[in-house]
Amino acid sequence: MSATKYIHIVDWIMHELDQNRLHSGMKLPSVRSLATQFQCSKNTVVKALEVLKQSHILYPKEKSGYFVVDDYKKPLTSNGQIDFLSAGPDPDVLPYEDFQHCMNQAIDRYKEQLFTYNDVEGLTSLRNELVRYLQNMQIFTKTDHIVVTSGSQQALHILSLMPFPNGKKTILIEEPTYFGMIDVLTLHHIPTMGIRLSNDGIDFEELERTFKTGDIKFFYIVPRCHNPLGHQYTNAEKKKIVALAKKYDVYIVEDDYLGELDSDPKADPLYAHDQNDCVIYVKSFSKVFLPGLRLAAVVLPEGLIPSFSQYKFSADFNTSPLTQGALEIYLRSGMFHYHIQRAKEVYATKLALALDACKTHLPLDILYTKPVNGFYLTIFLPERINVNRLIRMLADRNVQVGDTSGMFLKADGNKAIRISISQVDQQSISEGIFHIAVCIKAFQQKATFNPLSLTSNR
Image 1 (cartoon, rainbow, N blue to C red):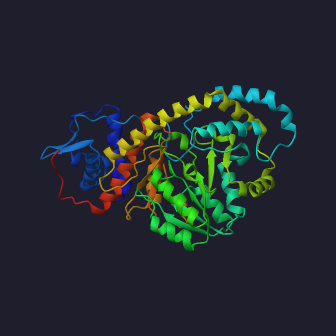
Image 2 (cartoon, rainbow, N blue to C red; image 1 turned 135 degrees about the vertical axis):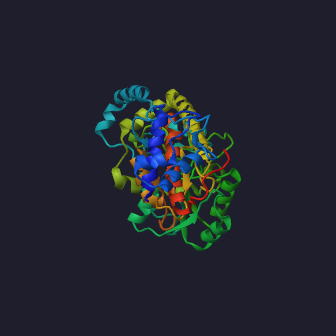
Image 3 (spheres, rainbow, N blue to C red; image 1 turned 90 degrees about the horizontal axis):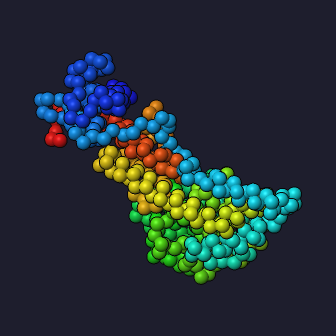
């Protein structure tokens, strides 16, 4: 019997609960009657009931049947998709009206510059404002060390292609990592090595060996709110990475795209520990603000500025002065600060709900990351589960998730799904993860179910 058959039974029971035709403490129809209703075997019905039992929705009474748990709280039903796939900001957090005022002011202030080419490094007034803004994130730099790019993707593209003073060719990345970086490296056939990142971090002995022998041009790292794991490096680990980079003449590209969401006021970027001009700091304004702006700031060591500017000029001459001017006004007005405070509260609440749902619904043998900030976590899957089939099963339940295969240099053997909570409303997070748990349990029970063991204590 296929997994989808008893998932159909699970869905029917959940629908009955949602419609209050089944409620707390109520006995379900017998296994025999359900088998007749769904035209399936009794074993198939029991599989469905066992899935709901393991999710604390039902419990069995010996010789009496299955009952709805007394303190059952049904998940709230979402009218549309539960989208754990998209990774943009929460639409309800986006400051449309505030930014519209800034855009109107920017048109008045910079309208003449809309008809001319501007500095390839970006508007001087915005870069001056970025110097002040970045100080709040322990990034102390000068205006002429900042280049404004059309999003962080352009910055990563340029850094990957341009030559570096160390004369090295190979780029080292964490695995898994941001798929956009892997796309750049793959598309341009750039020599690349990976170092495995897990819940426990990276192997520093392996990192040192790789720095020493791998002809490493730079190490691309997402030190906090990691995509897709949600991993955070400690300050001690960051200091160690910077020290190793100095020792072996390796640059570091620090992608701090969600740094504003870090709840630890003592957490520093790698850049704060750099005394030798080896860290390149990339700050995107897409994920925490408005993705359509396509704006990022890159803080460069002095020796890299001429080459970086030359490569940027060859790509697009200059980034839109209108969006640059609007961001400058938004930063200077203080509105960005209040926007970030609200965003931090919203995403922290959502992440807590997601972690609580994982703890409540997922089988005990399913591992998942437990980030403290950001809006990503990863659920690791057993070898016997077909990830693509699981994703299709969830899509049939209006739950969208993505696998992590594109976040590794080689996808083989990396069975996991990424959960992004940024665009999911709070009421739907637990419901979506419940559906994920049900589908995982369906696969597990298909492989291990024993029909002779039907009862257990509540």
